[in-house]
Image 1: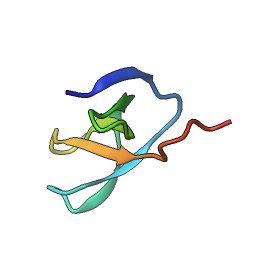
Image 2: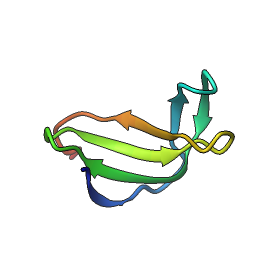
Image 3: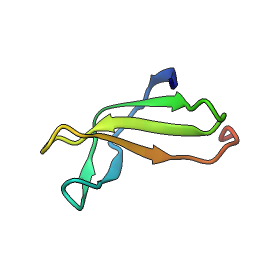
Image 4: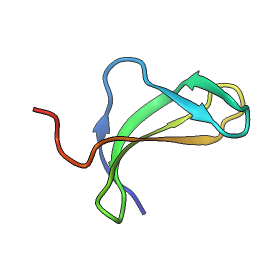
Length: 61
């Protein structure tokens, strides 16, 4: 289970595997996965599939 860090400001785009297209995510939030990797989790506005956008492992300064 992913640990929620908080909501993300601004638009975030990710690749929806079901639609096979880049989409602007609905309700994006930053999460930390169980292996310690940071990601943004959101929902595809077209089909409702959960989409993950992986980020670097270090915090941005």
